[in-house]
Length: 468
View 1 (cartoon, one colour):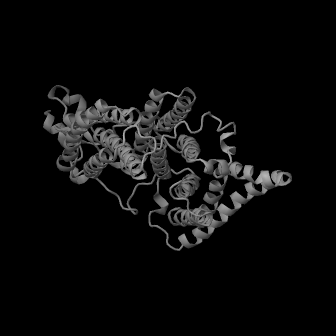
View 2 (cartoon, rainbow, N blue to C red; view 1 turned 90 degrees about the vertical axis):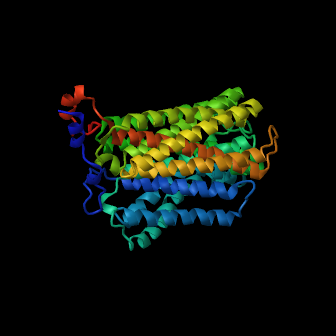
View 3 (cartoon, rainbow, N blue to C red; view 1 turned 30 degrees about the vertical axis):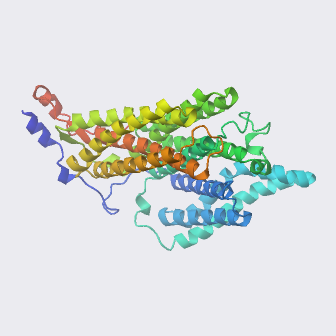
């Protein structure tokens, strides 16, 4: 039996099935995945909206901040009811979950209230707790009643573990941006203690004190958003352990959760030890964890379940190139983090040189994925995406250099925003590289040698990953 005959046993490209909602295979669903995903998604939207409104260079009125937060709950309820088979009931339950998660912020509000109404602090705590849950549940249910009028045709066949993973990815990308502003405004040591904040329990640090100092706002809000990422990753790990059949996929979110915990310790130790080296490690490790989250979103997708691998002579080259790009990206991100914290001219030159090398690798991997394997939709899309992301990264990098002020403590807002966007897009580039590597190894199989063709032919129809 020749290698060509073995290759012919692999499903040809034109037989790959991209299912419609009516023809998609059914997968086991754990009840509650939609509620958890939508609930944490609502909280993420609410927290990010509040952060953006209260940024020191924004300072939106309190009424606008509250209105936007409520709007996020309404919108979340609309989306939950539209895409969940439970309809508005999912919106109601998701709103309640969001209200419970938002209790992490209630203590900071109560601390300010207790100064003026000390005797009413305890009953107020109870009313705020119940109020947070009820208000979010009712607001989400109202949005859900509207969303139920526009049901999605896919609502009965959505993999909520995948949606939950995507929510964690988006929330963590936001956290990386928030951390970037901490670095840009030199606020990493603005709160000198950890895990407490100026002696307060982190979740009881008064909002009034947080707003008095811009450095404290950047650093403490970074800690609060990081706690939300931690709780979200824990909830995803528990849900995946109950909903997923593949044992290796069950392990992945727990590994991510451990990574998030390590990242928190790195960030706290960087403060207590005032270590620039730990700050660099903290910045790089965050992006590695973010890349793992992106992979988690990929392996829980429907296409990862259903698409068959394709045997091709180019597979070995593509696999090697994507791995090389992945390692090069990690080196480049380390150089970038060093530039942001050390501001050494020699490191800047190395960072720029490495950017050229990475760009060439990206173009090679991107054009091969888009051109050679364009009939495989995940590779075609990722090939185009990674080329677009690296193009944007180069533009942001040039803009960051033009606006770079070296060791200046008072960075202009435009410089801080551009360098932070450059950092966020770098994380996005690493995640896209991790996805391209994952899908390349998932969909492209090397052509077996003639000496091993007999043994390979007997297993060529087996899926590349275990299902239990």
